[in-house]
Amino acid sequence: MKRRHGNSRRPASGAGGRKQGGKQGGKPAGKGNPRGARPGPRAAGKPGRGDGVREARPEVHGVARWISKYGIMSRTEAARAVESGRVQIGGKIVLDPEKPCHPERQKISIDGRPLRRARVIYLAMNKPAGYITTAFDPMGRPTVHDLLPQGTGNVQAVGRLDADTTGLLLFTNDTEFAARLTDSESGVEKVYIARIAGRPDRPALRRFEEGIEIDGTRTKPARVKVLESGEGWTRVEVAITEGRNRQVRRMWEALGHPVHELERIRIGPISLGDLRTGRTRPVREMERATLQAPLEGGSR
Ligand code: URA
Image (cartoon, rainbow, N blue to C red):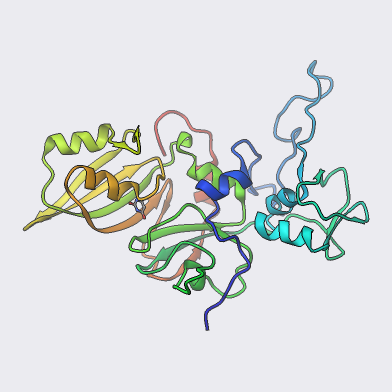
């Protein structure tokens, strides 16, 4: 039977996740922060009283956003929970998902239980072809969430892979981590192996690397390496730092070399390795730590 998850219908990033996560935020759990609590403004090294700078005000967001930021449920689900009277602030039921509040200043509860950060979850999946990157498909097609181990909790895909694309797909309930990964400014490389039609010549490879206009904007510098070619096809490795819709396919299409097969093999330091198709593994702390290290020129 197909499992329906209570997650958002959109991946954790791009059009959907950016709203939830925002770019600025603190870091997810790491060493010395085992319970997943993210540092507040002080712990994050921001100036406070006594530094000669006025103390930063705590962020104030709507209650539904806080619930989502804490990894309890998606923003949409949180809004529904509020509207159905399950959420209280300071002991009073609130029905407005946008009700401004701050969990460190007010007691927020859901179904009578205090709001606490959920355990942070980071998973890597080897996505098979034919699965849609969404939590629930109204047309009943198989989704990547059907492949998650039972009891995974409330995670969302980081970015999106087309139904036909295979390979590395990350899942998390850490919206800030997801936003950082998908932010093209962060320079995190996404590496793909593509089997394309024909054999691209040097000028085509250069154009791929220098940028191609898609939807009126040029793609950011990319890398391409020819791996092998045969009768009417070429296998290439490409690395991009953006995550525009069907970007790799559209770039090759624009050059007259449509993509026949596409597999993502790496996101920054996180590699697909020998993870079997349809399987999921936890993302190792080392992999996450490398991603979260400050960017020192170049891409990761
Ligand atoms: N680029 C594409 O064209 N498709 C994907 O699934 C991912 C990147």
